[in-house]
Length: 290
Image (cartoon, rainbow, N blue to C red; front, side, top):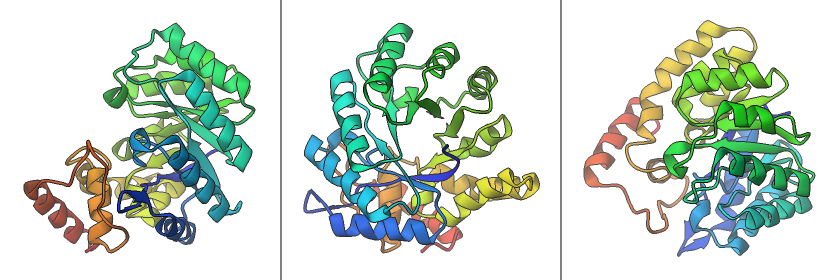
């Protein structure tokens, strides 16, 4: 159902409010640049500091602006299962193609708790669910056995994997089969994940190099493995630069330097340090982005 390059879209702000006009511009930018789909209100979209009303505004604006031209996977996760259900119900109501649901952060549930969390969301809302495993941000790792168990639920159709553990990711691919949409959650891992059966990526770097990230996935899926590998290696330093500081600080800073959006970011995240900004500018110049 979901394959290709999906952008983990930033949320543009203006005077501490969602910049709806800029959000619409970003949608048009990605459609023109060949992005397969848009993921609003993920971690890169600063979902943790969006109010529920802002969450609805961002998702509703993106779905309406896309107007069926590409896919929209709305970020609807929460560490409160009931809240995740409510956000997912809204995504379904406004016409999102699917939802991205992060593993509950801070609570540190057991594997059975993770299973029951996703099961309740999937059985309450009839919408394709992509689970999101990112232990570095949540403090909990969802094991392949849990993923495989959840994959048996009809509308749980895939997972965004950002564990960084290729053995674990390979086990998920093996246990869940080709019908399961395994997506990379880390740009630097996209090529290796494609090699073990992944379908694509939900990408941070696609905010600034959408055509290139889409091209990497497209080349692999068309069987041109060598071209895909070369693109991966070429962009590897850029992928690393997006994590000089906590995501989405570097990507928002990059987009500001490229004249795309303001670099406004919400506390407790803050503007990039001078030292890392200097490094980032050097990398962007190397790629002729600024």
